[in-house]
Length: 72
Image (tube, rainbow, N blue to C red; front, side, top):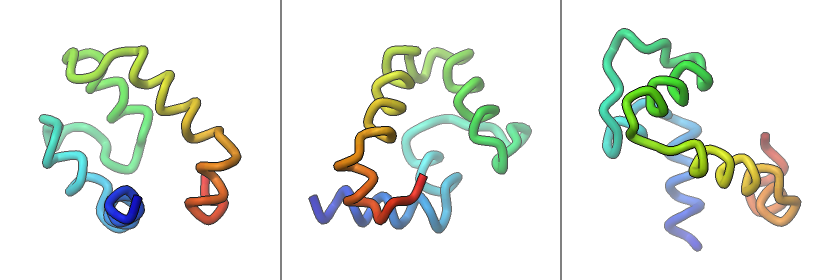
């Protein structure tokens, strides 16, 4: 659980740094636009629509929101 919280903190501080460790995101993708990043990952088959849906469900889970300090 601590590892997940630590990763979340890193993601808040440097989203592209964390994402670039796992995914291939070219510099031409607007790093300030989460939808552009998600769309690129979907278009290049690096993630599936099911994974996006699962992440959105987790984000909307009240227990997860409370754990992450109510951030959205």
